[in-house]
Image (cartoon, rainbow, N blue to C red; front, side, top):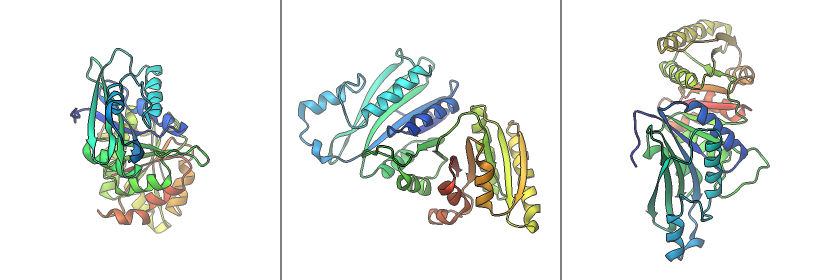
Length: 312
């Protein structure tokens, strides 16, 4: 089933952790209204132990919409669907369509149930097979035009299944993905976005993009620009000015804007603690993903205790 590029498309990676369901609530908030579609994705590694196929696998595929067969990851997607119904985002009257795609080396292949409302909204529940969780997420992002990908990383000590999302998976996806990625950690819905900016053109464009996204969920927008030394404060003030102009041009109100002097990573992490999301542009990589791991954005992503969004 083709994606509607005129709608706002959200990909939420589900692994059964509490964090992933908090990410679901945030996705619903961002996707409110009638112009957003949400895909819930569980990626499982190829499992050759299920070879044998035959009638049992045919029944499994045919019963996806009834959730009657315990396919790997199905319980997590089923729980997500139940939460969407509880939140009133979808209901049992939505029409459903089951889609199956053969995958070489795995008897179950990819399976998806697409739920559609009368207004044209869609919820997609997708069980995807891949050599690795990170590879599956990246492949899905390349296949379809998502405006936002949400990865809810598990906390230490949580039960970890074959499809779990840990720091290694998160790092790979954020490093290689070409779009906006929100890494959700203990995400709160209404505490605002702290958008960190430099005078770089990519940073200003990213600030405007996130401000529009924040407005979708009624999240207050705050700006921060950090100068490494007093000599750089003029550049930080320019960054705030440029970002303010771009965001207000998009029709979004800015609650507060401030500059700071010090280590950018430390200042951003400290000042970002009260917010739902710290937002950063990956503007230091100059087109090459391998340089992302040396950027301020990467260090903030790795060290912050709260949620971080990287926008490209």
